[in-house]
Image 1 (tube, one colour):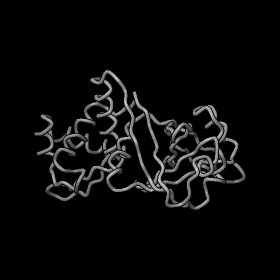
Image 2 (cartoon, one colour; image 1 turned 135 degrees about the horizontal axis):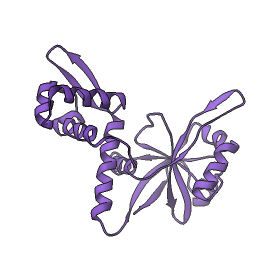
Image 3 (cartoon, helix red, strand yellow; image 1 turned 135 degrees about the vertical axis):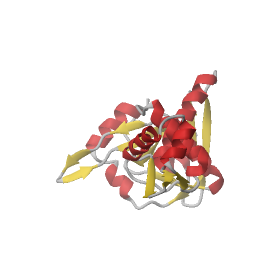
Length: 224
């Protein structure tokens, strides 16, 4: 559950409704205060709080400021949207993400062989990952569905230090490909390409699915 203050989220929502997701929006604290029905000083504090949480970026001028909602800010709004969807929906559903198999950089084999990661994936997903990942490239039409996944509940696999190196946290979302339990993995603090999905499983997915580069595969993600 997000710990963002309701007042901050209302301010973020107001900026987004003004067009701040699509492009920077020019607004003064006076105008924002009128929209939020509060004082310019309070509106200014809300902006500083959002900037501190990396939900917005802004360029300040003497007569106002250009404000943009960041990916983190958009994700926060999507989480709230998903909460309302769960609240008013009586049954779950699923998302389907078709993609084309592509070759990765080979780094997945190394990271999935690290014991601290393996133990956490086993605990959270119920399987120890095969040393390697399946990389799929989505079409432009499927990227909006991929973005909806950000509003679901992801597992956080914590980072650690070993061999003089620091390994970062990883976010993981349980899913399936055909009848194989899998997990979508995303490095926790990186801006991962939105058209690439990286998947782990207890088996080598290429062999299990009989696919090669250029073939298609479909990820299924269930939600409550």
